[in-house]
Each structure stands twice: as structure tokens, then as C-alpha cells.
Figure (cartoon, rainbow, N blue to C red):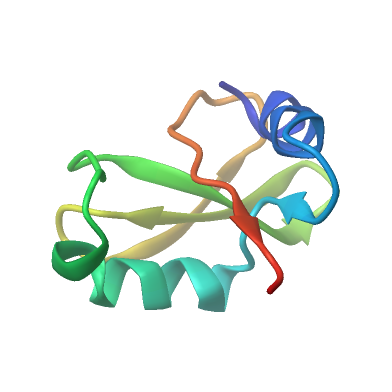
Amino acid sequence: MNWDEAIVACKKLGTGWRLPTKDELNMLYKNKEEIGGFADANYWSSSEVVSYSAWVQNFYLGDQLNFIKNYTFYVRAVRAS
């Protein structure tokens, strides 16, 4: 889904669910083997670069890149405890 769809999808999960920040997504990447369920693909973060682009975490190589928000990538929601 694109970035706007990802934001909405996370909110639809209920109270407290959201798209992770760039730093939170990197922490998930570093612990992906213990957590499980990740594809070797790009995942959206909530961290914007400018109004039309946001940060993405690559779960294959570990890179963080920014892309235009209309690109489609994977989404992994997080929730505050």
C-alpha cells in the first residue's frame, strides 16, 4: 500500500496502533529474526522527509531510504504498551 493507505490501515486496527517511526522500524529490522513474520522487502515508516516523501526500511539489506509516498510497500503496525 502507499504511505497514506498505510497510515489509515494502522489507525483502523484500533486505539494505539500506528506506523512505526524510522528508528522503531530499524529496531524491528535488527530484531527481525526474533520477532518473525517479515518479508525481505521495504516497509513504510511514519517519519516524513518532506510533505511528499517518507522513510522506508529495507528488511533484506537493512538500508533506510526515502521514497515518494505514492510508491507501494509493506506495512508493519506497532502499538505503545
